[in-house]
Length: 193
Image (cartoon, rainbow, N blue to C red; front, top):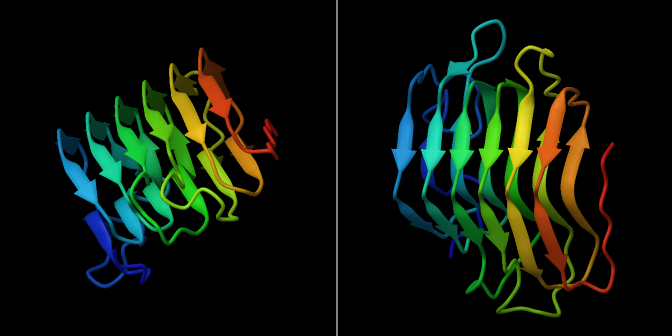
């Protein structure tokens, strides 16, 4: 299981040498029914920066497992759908900070729906690390095209350390509906900035 920060299973990037460079110019991209195991990033999906974001990305029905830090890392989307994905580190013994779905840098009409995020440290239950289940940053959407997190489930969240199950930073007009969380950590922090 590589932990170097340039490893990833599926990389959508604006650079051939960095997995997290904006500007991929990949509108109408569909990624479905894949299994990705390992990497520092399981998957990166780097859209474009304003004024032309990545249009209508579909990332659905994938299994992203045993990554080192980031399950899904991306941003710069308009009308993206990230749905019904299974994201976990169930078998990874060397763990660090856990980001299930990490999205940044302007998103609007984002739909994060029906994902399962679980088991960040099942093989290393006494490890100490910070957990971010769904992280959204710098993504204030217009009121006419809000971002939505709905029907996601976060469970079996073992390990020691702070847990931010739904973390929102500078991302107004984002709606959270019918999500389920179950944390097994003795220290849990749920934020809704």
